[in-house]
Amino acid sequence: MKKWIALLLALLLAATAALALAEGEKDALAEIRERGTLVIGTEGNWSPWTYHDESDTLTGFDVEIGTLIAEGLGVKPDFKEAAWESLLAGVETGRFDIICNGVGFTPVRAEKYAFSDPYAYTTAVLVVRKDNEDIKTLDDLKGKKTTNSPNSTYAMMAEERGADVQYVDTLGETLSMVENGRADATINAKGSIDDYLKEHPEANIKVALEFPGEAVAYPVRKTEKTESLVAAINDVLAKAREDGTLEALSIKYFGEDLTKAE
Image (cartoon, rainbow, N blue to C red; front, side):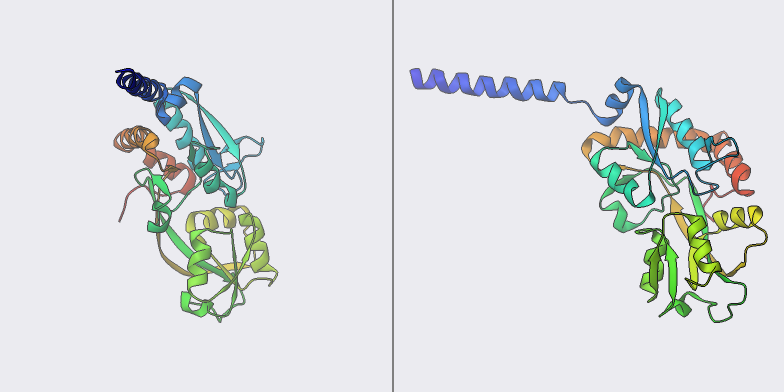
C-alpha cells in the first residue's frame, strides 16, 4: 500500500512539474511582446538594403520594413549591427529575433532556419573591371578569383562555378578588390551595384552579365516556439503588400518594384 501511495505521489509530482513547465513556457512572439522589442540583426553597410545615411542614421529598405514589422507586432525595433557571417549564427543562438538584411531564401538555409514569405525578388549581376573582356558568363569564373561575403549565396554560386572566392566583409571592399585587380569578378545584387555606381560613377567596373537572382525573405530561429512569430511577420508583410507600402519602399530605395515575382 505504501509503495502504491509513493508511486501515485511521484506521478502526481511529475505531472504537476510538467504542467508548470508548460504553463511557464512562452512562444517567441509572446516573449517579444513581453520584452517590448524586436531584436533585428543587420549589417548596416549594404546599401540600399541597410546602411547609414549622411547623418549616420541607420536606414534602408530592410530597416524600414523591419521597423514596420516591429510596429505590427506591437513592439519597438532594436537594430543590432553585425558582420554578415555572424548574422545567421546570431539567429540560431537567439541573439537576434530576425535578420533584416536582404537574405536570399535557399533550400539549404531552410533546413536550419524558418523563413517568412518572400518580400522581394532580386536580379543578380556579374561585375568585372571595365577592361576585362575574358569574363562574360558564370562559366567563365572557373579558375578565376572572385570576392564576396563568406557564406553568401553569391559566394556559393561562384564556388559552384569553380572560382577561388576571396572573402571580405562589405560591398565597398568587394568592388575595391575588383577595381584594383585583386579579384577578377564578383556576383552581387543588381540593386546594390546600381546604388554603388550612382554614388561612384567613376568606378572602374562594369556589369558583364545580368540574370535572375533569388527570393528574399526574413529568417528566424527554427523551433516550434517561433511558428507564431513567423505567422505574425507574414501577416504584417501581407498587409504592407496589399496597401502598397512594400512597392512604395522598393521604388524609394531601388527605383523599381522588386516585391513581385515575375
